[in-house]
Image 1: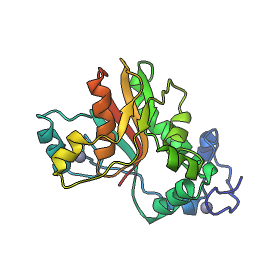
Image 2: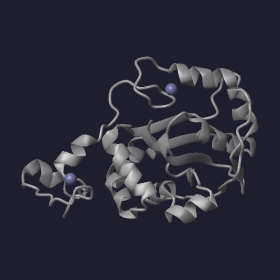
Image 3: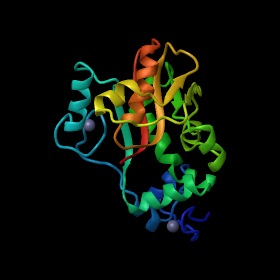
Image 4: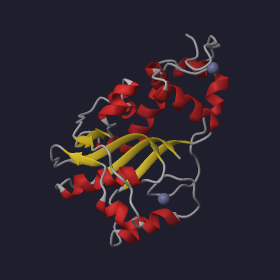
Length: 227
Ligand SMILES: [Zn+2]
Ligand SMILES: [Zn+2]
């Protein structure tokens, strides 16, 4: 099998240790895999950013804005944003190379089992949607592809409302007033929102707010990268 990123052949030397690993097919060669930086060590318990204390200043701000309780229960991200993953994501998303998503398949499934496994039976996966225009340009929604890796109930119940204008509003007014999504159906189960990247957390919280306001009991977010 060839490396999905550099196309070099992946040569596996048979040893007892990698013999045990073989069922999870390796998508990248050792060199390319080393470019990806898995978040390890202490992290913010809410947004997954590498951080030494329990809750980072950004998440403390979010809490204050919503009367002490964040609209999301927790975000979990797998990778740190660096130049290697940036290049992969760009080619995958913006240049329509669908297959590159498979680079992340094994780690996405594994992290899901580790972090959200306890919820698997009583929760629903909801991918963050693209607008129709973006979807037409790119041919697929990367968040939808990620949810498809997981053998679980999934529902595409959010629509991205197009043409929002960011006027001269404060950050607080933006996050409370302008929601780029609309919700097509209500959900009475816990939702795990899925997207490729958590950057400021605003997009995911907009989606979470709609779900919560419509009676969803709790929202987690699961993202490949913490920007
Ligand atoms: Zn490679
Ligand atoms: Zn945080």
